Image (cartoon, rainbow, N blue to C red; front, side, top):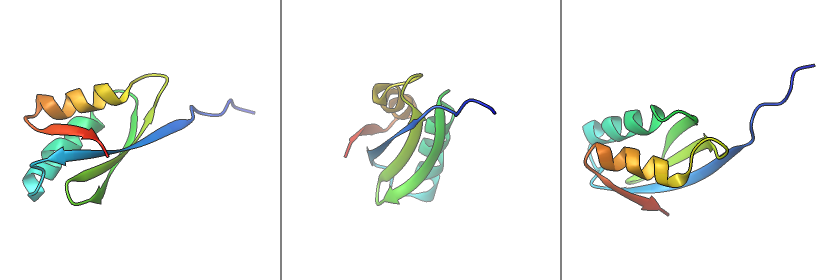
Length: 76
């Protein structure tokens, strides 16, 4: 019997300026590339639902990834 995987935390990030397909693709790719992120999905206009391993990364790590590609983000 294998050990269960990590329990995933979930957060909705609001991303200012993510209002085009290109911007959404850029931000989604940046967040998905953070080690510890399990999934990134649209959660509404200018919002992303992120599932991540809270033992490995924090919400601030996700926000920093968004900032690195030129957008502002925060928890909704």
